[in-house]
Image (tube, rainbow, N blue to C red; front, side, top):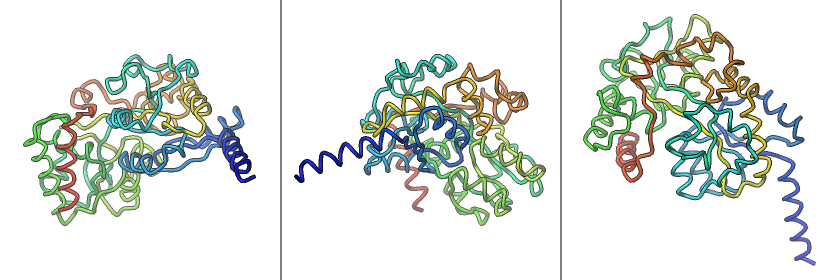
Length: 340
């Protein structure tokens, strides 16, 4: 009898899983109206849990989340680690015909050749949100690293924050030279000693503290800053200092033991619809990797250099790459930065 009840419980759980879709996603990263439209079209109830860093995402998956969530949204340079750790499953591309809508540069990314495991969601940059009523537009990262004169917040993300320090020093964000990474770490340690340093925050947290007036600068993702500038006209703005910064692509992936992989494929295909993709970027204020969505993007956003950087600025921007065994150099330096 107990065995029969156990089997019935399993079937009941599977039935419930097939009626909902569970997302594990960055804060403030999807238009609620998109989730409502997806539910209306598919009959699937969407449940959303939030994270603030790639490290938090991986820790959750390793702690059992790999069997709790259907779609996750990691940054490009974490994709190889997720694949290597067997935390994600290959995509069934036959169930995602809208993959064809991606721009060519996102169809065969170096971190996932052939999109075997991932499909691009949004792309963007890091930079500085700043208070226009308290400071001038920051031309250099030196406003944080050389002689800070106003309260600031650093991003709680190792590769992005070390990458910015490396750009400030004139190095590549993907250098494998331990001495260069150590110098970048020293730059961050010196910044921590400043009486103006207010701590490390996720991008949304830093943005919120600048908007509230607690800080004059914060390292953030561009979309967070663009939305904040629209909501607080005249108070805040976004800038990429002259040394350049990091570029990123966030992708949609399906955890290895997702409860509803069929629903996950339907969701990914839904997001890659041209009009839905445009709705996503018009809400998030990040650049779309969906070439078919571009005609539906708000014209003012297409012209906004904070969202689509001009060619001259792109020359000073770098995508963060997975460095394999050399990732440990960054891990060691970041641990030292955070612990001292």
